[in-house]
Every structure is written in structure tokens, then in C-alpha cells.
Length: 109
Length: 119
Image 1 (tube, chains in turn red, green):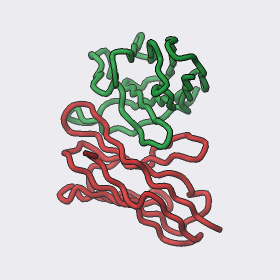
Image 2: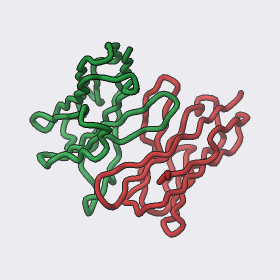
Image 3: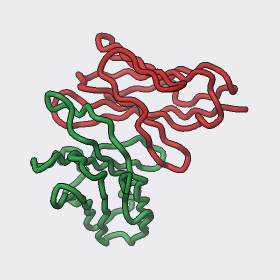
Image 4: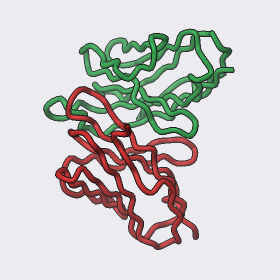
């Protein structure tokens, strides 16, 4: 049983396209995190949110607590956005983090 | 340094040997996390330290795994009697403090990881 489900697993887009990555979870959370992992392996935290919407540059993250769902959007996608995007949740009981399996995004010039 | 550092960056060992992996969190960060990412798999939570509190070891896969955090700063993850299935990238992250009501609601800053290969 996966506490966090992401879709799609793989995504290929043309440069400039609008991209959406979805994340659903099944437990109560204190926060949801979107992470970016580049081919070299380094992980960067993009967003941490517990309600509503956050925007940073071309990236937008939304969360619907009632529906236990979050989306990561990338506007005007660029090849440098190519990476694995990982959804993670911090459960509101205990200290556990649960991770999605990631969405591998490739943006073609 | 400005970020989380980990050492060694790569480690090759023989099955049955013990290994120690080190993490230097960002100065002033009270929370420290260890994760594992096996080849082709997602991230897996291992252990969490917060200040001087007892660590949350609920993610450790077996009693061969242990971790310490000395002086609230540097942490060492030790794997005893390594097995081939321990081969993975071991990632450390730190954050300033836990979120409200004990939740883990703070941005985490990840180290570059240690790639462990057990032959």
C-alpha cells in the first residue's frame, strides 16, 4: 500500500508546454513537499505547503486538503526543467515521511 | 559551508563489512533526516533527529542500521554487516525546526548523498 501516489510516472513535453504532475495521498498530513531531483542525483526542495497555493517563478503548487490531492504545474516548460519530481508528505502523526515514486519529466527543445 | 555535506561521496565495500556515512547539516538546523534511495526506487525515510530528543528510528530497515547525532550537529549512519541489498544512495537532509504541532512542516535541505555499493 502506497501512502503517496504520483502520476504520470513518465512525461515528455515540448518546450513551452504547460505541465501538470499530480499527487494523491491517503493519510493525514502536516505538510506536503515537492522535490526536484536532477540526473546528477541532487535533490532540491521546491515547495512545502499545507494549504492553498504557492508560486515560485514558473512553478506553481496547489493542494486540496479535503481531497488529499496536490498538483505541481510548470508553465512555459524548458529543457532545464527535465528532472524527476517527487511528492512527499509528512504525516501528522509521528515523524514519518512518505514519498511518491516520482515523475520523470523530459522537456524536448 | 552553506549547504548540507555528506561523506564519503562514494563507498564500495564488501559484503559483511561495516560502513559509516557522515552528514554535516546546515549550521543552526535542529532537525536532521536520513533517507535511502535504492536503484530504480523512490526515497525511503530512515531516521529523524530533532534537537536533543530521542530519534525516531521507525524507518530503519533492520537492526544492522543505526545512527547517532553528536552535539546536535554531525550525524553518522552506521550499517553493520552490509548486505548487497543495502546498496543505495543514502541522503541526509536538515531543516531549521519542526513545523507547528510537531509536524514536519519545514523545508528540508538535502545533501548530495553517499552512493554505497556492496559487492
